[in-house]
Length: 203
Image 1 (cartoon, helix red, strand yellow):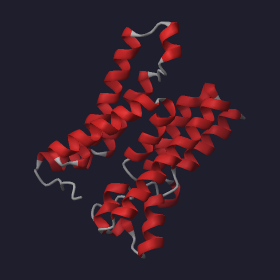
Image 2 (cartoon, rainbow, N blue to C red):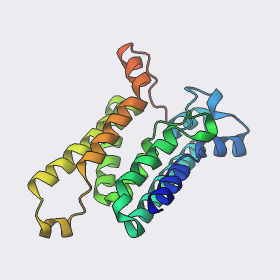
Image 3 (cartoon, one colour):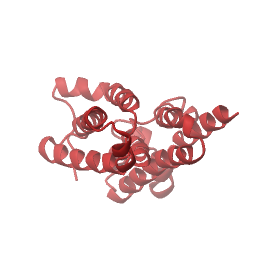
Image 4 (cartoon, helix red, strand yellow):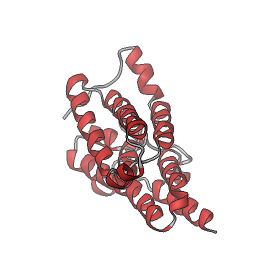
């Protein structure tokens, strides 16, 4: 029963299309008909409204954080399942014929629940890479990879029970899966980067 509860709750939380809801409510626009058609914060930014994009980013992060933190506190044996289904809910929402976002903000919410240190590393890396290359896709992929590598290094070099108490240490396997999924959701962006047609971030 716990398996079913956490599976449904995580997926349904992740599947809430905040980008679509927020832009529709506040601007009357359908985000799916703007820019890349993606429902995430980066595409919401293409509406020209930074506040709607920031609001989408925050809510997409919160919907990633809530089910995972609940799982950590009440269903600890299903934490990784909760992480995965929350992310997949955003990428493949049943309400939008399984055509969702790329999952970066939701991923940030998930790792924030798993490790606040890793979320800070992700944000810092994303900002630095975006300032250098000006591509949201490059920043997202590189930051997700950085989080995985740093956590893997911590597992290898700081695996003692004492250190595990001091430093929260998520399982690197789930972080690797997220890295692969982020590459998958950005496959079109990778294609555009190769063809030099990828849009740069405009702030």
